[in-house]
Length: 54
Image 1 (tube, rainbow, N blue to C red):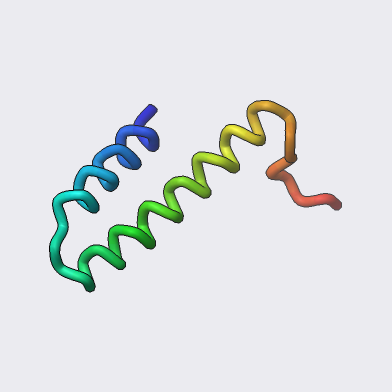
Image 2: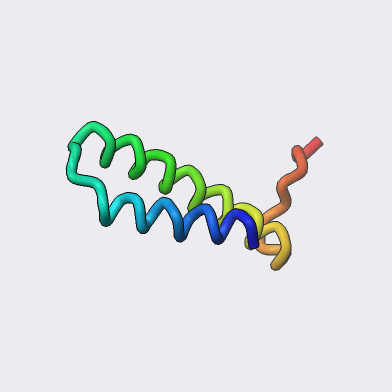
């Protein structure tokens, strides 16, 4: 839940940001957080294994 809250906060920051550099930084951080959440969900669903193949 903490990661989902962080993503929501980043989205709110992005909507409130007017500076182009700051927006890009927030977009990058948001993209990474969303990717991390996707990996966690896929691992929990059994869609993908987060462990190395060897």
